Structures are given as C-alpha cells and as structure tokens.
Amino acid sequence: MTQVTIVEYTDPVCSTAWGAEPFFRRLDWRFGQHLTWRKVMGGLVGNAATGKEDWDRVSAAEPMRAYWKRVWKLTGMPYPNPMKLMLESTDPAGQAVKAAALQGQDIAEAVLRRFREEIFVFGNGPQTKEEFAKAAQGVPGLDIDRWLADYDRPEVVEAYRADWAETRQPNDYVRNLKHDSPMNGELKHSEGHDRYALPTLILTGPGGEYTVAGWVDYADYETALEAALPGSTANPRPDPTPEEAFARWGVLTGQEFTFLCGENARVPEGIHVHDWGDGLVYFRRDEALARGLLQSA
Image (cartoon, rainbow, N blue to C red; front, side):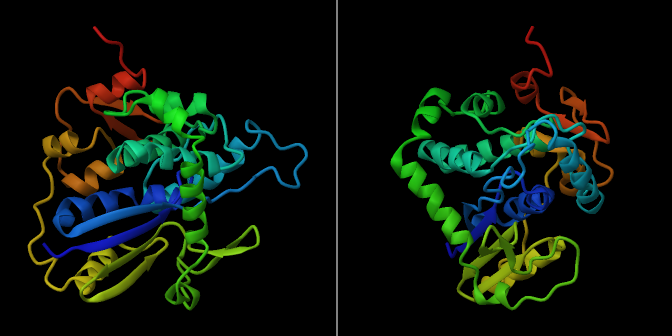
C-alpha cells in the first residue's frame, strides 16, 4: 500500500504540540492506513536556569501556568491548574522517550503522551528517573526497570542528540515562511540555533513533500496529506464512536472527546471523569487506576 511518511518535530513540554494532539489523533484515525509516523524529539528547553541564580522548579511553575493558560484559550487543551513543578530542561524527558523506543515505537509514543498528561493535566514536569517512573506507571508493555536502565545507554544518548540536531536543520519552506497567526510556524531561534517551530509535520509521498508548521487548522493537515498522496483523503474512516475512542485511547481530554466523537457524544459508563480545574479529562478505568485516581477493589 502506498504510504506517506510523516516526520513530526515535537517536545513533551510544548503547549502547542499538546494542543495539536486532537488533530493528530483524528488524522491517524481517519487515514492511518496511509501513514508511517516518526516523532523527532526537539529539545525545546536546554536549561531554563541559565543566567537565573534564583531559579528553582517550584517558583518557575506559576509563570508557566499563566502562559499555558493563554495557550489553552487558543487550543482548548488543558493547562496545568495548578502547576506544581517545572522542568529545568526537556532534554532528559526527550532522551527518556528515545529509551522507551527500544521497547517499540508504540511504547515510546505512550510514554510521550504520559509525560504530556503529567505536565498539562497534573502539573508535574518529569525530569528525573523517579519522576519518569511515576508518570509512566501502567503504560501497557513498558518494562520500567529496563527502560530506566536503557536511558543511559550510549546509543540512546546518541539517538536523542540526533533528534535534537535534526530539529535544528529546518527546511527552506520554514526558513521562508511568513505567518502572523498566534503560535505560528515561522523559523524559531533558541540557544543560538535556528530550529523548527513545534509542532511541525513534514509529509512526504508520491506527490512530493509538504510542511505544516506551528498552530494551524486541522484542515491544513488533510490538505497536505492529499497533496502528498492524491486521493488519500477521499474515503476517510468514519469518526470513532465514544466506545471506539476509549478502546483506542485510554485518556481523552474534553477537547479531544468532542473533536473526535462529536458535539453530542456521550461518555460511556465506566469512564472516570477527572476535573483538572477548568474542564474535564476522561480516563479509562485502567488508566485511572494507574494514576491513583481510583482504588482497585
């Protein structure tokens, strides 16, 4: 079957990438048979404490919460309310995702999603091995002891640094992009380097290469897919029922549930409802148990 390769530049702590999760879930649900997806860990924050002698993870949390609340108004995806513990660097979390990939790409993607939920739902930015293990409890198929041991392997360090470097080699499309929307996809500059905005997707297929950068409408992703593989969007898989959605994804934010299943969709029985402070997040029972939101019988 003809495939489109998607390269996604992202980072666990990027609020715009978190905001785009409903879009990517719909794109993969509708057209996954055409897609091969590779996530590149971009390393958004090298060291937040640089030049700030009084910086600490607790006091840095509230300013980020206030910023992420503004992003929430744009994306509808949760912001941490409250934010308890900020990350000094996103490099460790990015490297942890690469370590999880040694147990499979699906597991790595599940770990990345868990990190995002730990940050944007529960307000804890995971940075240490102990914090990683807490965030990833109950990830299906993940051997946590092996994962934490693999974290320090030279090939894992090298794989993360390769992702970091790739994110800082933006293509000509992004270098020439002029866009005045919020959270735009123009070329970014951080810590002395040019880089892609996060998230940026590059779709490559028989029709060519197409870049979708920054915060855009969902329709832009389908347009790029159709250009990369003409005819691919003609017969999308029907959008999921609530039961299908929770069978596929163990956690759905309110924004995701409505976007994927429709405005009138109703949450199935047995789903745990969690109020994060400005809306609801829905957890399948196994996920709620893993987070300590429910106690086992």
